[in-house]
Image (cartoon, rainbow, N blue to C red):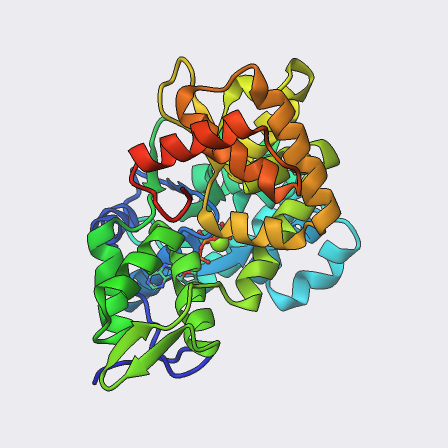
Length: 385
Ligand SMILES: Nc1ncnc2c1ncn2[C@@H]1O[C@H](COP(=O)(O)OP(=O)(O)OP(=O)(O)O)[C@@H](O)[C@H]1O
Ligand SMILES: [Mg+2]
């Protein structure tokens, strides 16, 4: 057995796949004509790991570079994310408040010191450009224009970029790479490489829950193996119970939803209990909150673009958000959705609306129960019927 699921830190979990993206990055890094490389993608898709790995490869080929992490806590500190590029003996003057031009000279000193040249530029990897302070954005622009420096930056698609970063993003000679979740085949390949032999049910459940998102996939495997939901039977991993993510994954997703304003959180709760919901279920005064959910990647629209449905971006959100709702709050949310759906119900909605009413502890009228049962039988869902 080749399984490498060795515990929560998963020592066997190295960088995998992404050959096409790596080839594109390898071509772009070191090319003076393409001074900016922008890597976008949904939360947890693998932007940081991909760019880190590409930088490691560039350095292994003799290039120079450094990863700088922008974070919300440093967003108000001028040059906060770029301290790693400032030689130690200049730090005191930067801390005391130095002009951009002086910091430019300091970084240039560093870049020359490490041996960068115009045919092998120094790569500044900015992870999470969306949090970069404006002073650093301005400095990076100056550096790519006037120094042997190339910028490779990651950012979450949909999240607003700081104003200062727009010139970086919109320049004409930018290489743009949008990282997608792994497709089914790649997801299966990662499962095979990290776990070895698994049953088709395990593969299916991991795909259903992760939808190829690298972070979710990894945390689901770690969490489910750790909690015995995926268990070793002989040499094969089998599904012992329905999957849940790890505590870290739940915490990560909760942090993302906690940052949402209350009205957007409320809509996310409605989706967690009742998705998919037609766009028409949301009132005009809720559209800004809904937009917030869509932009932050917590929810997505699916189906017919003229009349789309809205759902949470990943099944794990459903699990995490509904686990946070008290039974009383869940009833209130269900009641609200049932009321709103009354006027919008389509024939196929009978069954789920009846289930919501039962979950609320109410008794739906007999004719509704009969209608729902007929619908369930027609759909061969005899467990519900
Ligand atoms: N190609 C890969 N091979 C193996 N594991 C990967 C790969 N890409 C990502 N991962 C794993 O998935 C997790 C999330 O990846 P990463 O942090 O790069 O995502 P991200 O897109 O930067 O997320 P965020 O939007 O939160 O910054 C990491 O724990 C990493 O180990
Ligand atoms: Mg990242």
